[in-house]
Length: 141
Length: 297
Image (cartoon, rainbow over all chains, first blue to last red; front, side):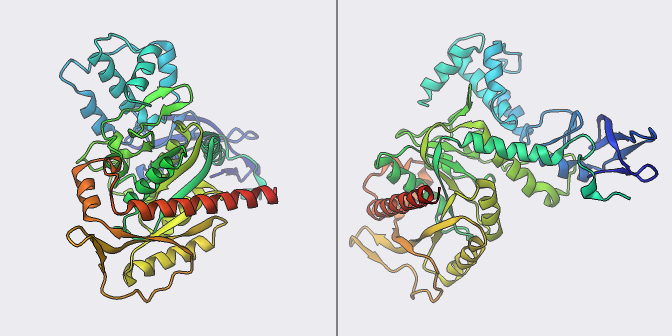
């Protein structure tokens, strides 16, 4: 979608977004000529349609409530809840975390919980590159 | 007053560019894949998934590096067929490592990410209106899987398609015009009528369809060791495509799949030989396509 300031015949520019509120996204536009501002307020269905494309509107990811973008978040919570205090923060080294950032965003929580379970099973207290390489060998990849 | 096409940018979000960038990441992710082979039908229940895994096994036995993308997000079968339900995603420098079967076939399936018996539920801020956005979300997930997995160097990436004639066209767009298609039919007018629609749909794309496989062409009776008819009469629906081969229904294969065993555990399946011949024919056709593409270039 593009927006035009009818008075100035100029394309409006996006100047900011507000955090999503109950599925509604607020996007503010300004005319570069007359500085007139207006806000586009989406309903949840509109937010979700755009969000389903996996794109960002301004600085905000459309289609989310600011939480995980994983479409399967309920199962991730179940998978994370293990018997050995699995909900506790498990440290990842910077390099291991940067590898995690390379994989599809929706799959990160599953990968994270799987690797952390593997590390716990091995009696390790942190995930680093050695653990990732070890998991790769362990699972025959 | 200016119109849509007079305004160059979309105001700041560049949504179209973001979608194009996603497609570029798919192309980069598949840079090491020599052949993308989509296995579809249009009809459900004709054995697309088992045939996909059988073809993968046959291609692998012939020395090819092979992976499978289970594109049926909501009815994933490949994790079970490859016995990788308990696999995990291991992050690497070039994406997530692809879980592999014992014989080294890569399998990416929601069946690994999302344990049975839970139905996949996409989180949404618009509950009750999933019919308006669900297909878009699914294709975004598939794009992310294609772009974000570390596929490595592959001779074949087999894509196990979900049912639906119109979706075949959407997959042709997603996978690009070099993706090749194989359709699965069974000897029933009902199923072949739908496969005929898929052929018609694919003719409107630039993609090449190598042919169709006649699956469940009779069933194998282990008592008398013969193949007996499964359907009463020859189908009257003609398919305007070369038949790559026929494969009988094998109750042993069905039982194996239900047990959750890997196809690699059953080297004496009656379908092994015909599927091997089909794999040979696919390799021959693919090499023809490559030669043609080189000539054109």
